[in-house]
Length: 235
Image 1 (cartoon, helix red, strand yellow):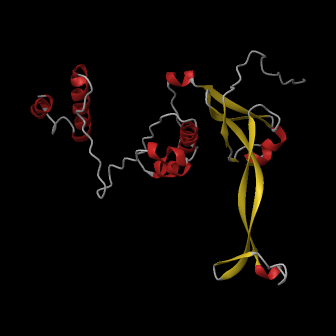
Image 2 (cartoon, rainbow, N blue to C red; image 1 turned 60 degrees about the vertical axis):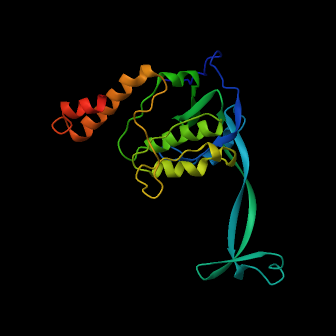
Image 3 (spheres, rainbow, N blue to C red; image 1 turned 90 degrees about the vertical axis):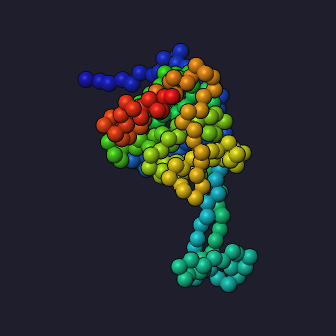
């Protein structure tokens, strides 16, 4: 039996509003694992593959150089040993970030790597990410959040543990630093006021009060947060 890989349909929508950023990373489970940048170098002519030049720091032991070669070199000390520090430029490849869509991941089929994007309008229909511990749920959400930040869009990240929110701060560009509001409810040194009954219009009053009441019922139970206290909350 012979198999034939069908090409994508010609009317498949292609994202067009490309950003200057790219998404790269590590491919863990596939026939050809490793750095995504090295894999995508073979696909660099693809419409969804982009590249950028980065600077990497390289350290080499001083003993590998002669006295003449060390002239003008930057020497640094690490763990009690001296190294020659050099900065090299390297081109890395990754999937492009688009303003009219978001990258969900890469589909790997028969050692072919194809990006999976979701149109911006489709995100309003909501999506749900499930999986056991260690399957990459947090990394997936981080990838979506990074693209929203790079595209200049607004986003809200709620993290009950704190690790994901702290990691996300490293991906905020300088021009968006003033847009960030970091709210840590457990930080007693820098508390932030939160009015659970704040409303914009009077029509929201009943809904806001009922939502706050339900929260306290779930926290303390109906046997403690009983009808009498609920009435106090409402009036």
